Length: 166
Image 1 (cartoon, rainbow, N blue to C red):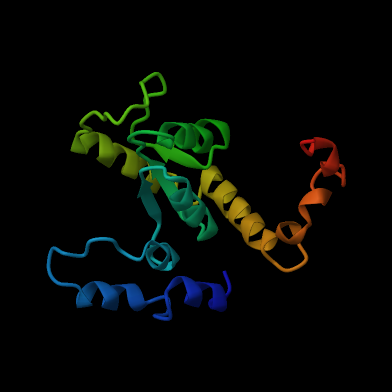
Image 2: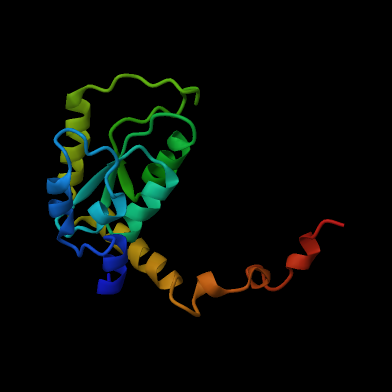
């Protein structure tokens, strides 16, 4: 990742600024941390995610391996996509058959620990290589002139007008 991207993610604090930022916070009141800055920090080797899509995208962007812990709503689907379909993450606990209402089971510390240990054990392995590859592709897509800059009409060969509602 280039320095400019990292600097933007860190809100001008630089890659090492997260430690100072945490030190400036009142004890036990960190609240919501600057997630992009944390993920951009070079020492971060993994991220326990509740599987909201923006968090997943940020983690991939910064080439940080993920352990998925979906709680409710679309999180189960997101986790399934990244673990089972794309093999970009590992899991703590996923329950595909569960109703997606706002109910969640208690997950014991040993289950969380097992997921994190699995992620640590896999560090540098095939899954991490896939995350790195997807990270590079996502960053390349945002370079001026690449796929994110294509007009919507060219996405399907310029035939978008055939789908217009009349």
